[in-house]
Image (cartoon, rainbow, N blue to C red; front, side, top):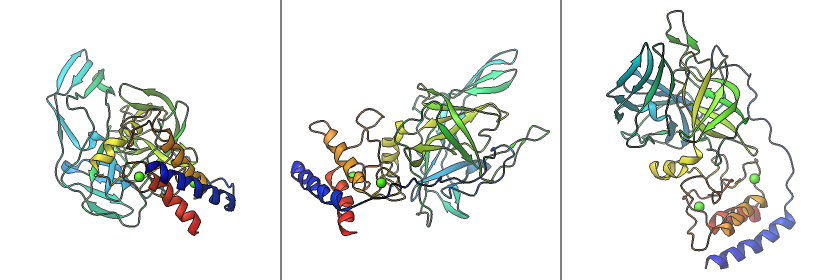
Amino acid sequence: MKRFILAVALGLMGCVSSTDEVDDVDTEDAVEESESAISNAATYTGDPAIGRLLLPNNKKCTGILIGRRTVLTAARCITTISGWTLQTTNGNGTKTSSTVTTVFGATTFVVNGTNYGSATSSPYKYPSTYQWQDTLQNNVVVATNLRDDVGLVMLSSDVIGVTPMDLALVLPTVNQAVELIGLGATGKDAQGIYVGQGIKRRTTGTVASLNSTHRSARVNGSSNFCDEDWGGGLIGQQGSHRSVFAVASDGDAACSSYSNSSYLSYHLKWIQAQSAGNSRPWQNHANQLDTDGDGFVAPIDALLVINFLNSLPMGSNGELATIPDASLPTAWVDVDGDGYVAAIDALLIINHLNGG
Ligand SMILES: [Ca+2]
Ligand SMILES: [Ca+2]
């Protein structure tokens, strides 16, 4: 049955290819804001899907709308940690937690000027045995070992009028150009207190290195993610499509040396499952028919689905895999957003092309 449908799809592809011409126009740069730093930066008005999370106990973070009611953030924003063990000598050493507890309760996502309340459950991706460990140097926290610092806030209702952002399907790469966007602090005042939170800011940088143990990407720079930017986005280009590659996780206390962000392609299956299909990580939210994300619906978008289907091993049901590997698509091939790649995903594009 599957083979028959594919044959039909391929036949239709031939018709479409011969009749449709697609202009080869580069998509314009999606970001035309200044290159200002997150520290002491001008405000950034783009990316309405990136908003502020108001959490219990007056805690605040950044969140990114990735489904109509799914907000991506850092696990550290929606958990509490306790049972600290200090092992220090002359102010140097480690500080290790023993317990991680999910925060339940009133959480508000402020997006595009509107407040949305959350459901009571906030899944996070830390391993169940996770221990948070800070490194102390002269009594100052200078690094953490955050790992899989990925969390979701599920809203009680759909966000209206804001297109969710798309997740990158591939890992970031070293030297990749990225944007750092969040609503955190600009730095510290003379008393050492973080200031300037609550305003969206943007800076740019390049990925300095990847940590495969913590599954994070490091960006060095004198202006960087700062307090309350956690949960913000490390955003770059996958092909010609602007996508969220990683979630802001931690950095140096002065916000002027480095940051680490948990990359997301490893967690797409988890995100799909935890959001009950709401986030649809293998779907292009801006236009689900545009699987390569170049801004046009063209035969190549259907062909990418068909090629991926044909590359699946014998017996595969098309369910998208758990972790990045050779079997994962590098295009947003799940047109209907059900978490599987099937002939229907190609046919939806082909039918659109034939009808238009
Ligand atoms: Ca396309
Ligand atoms: Ca599908």
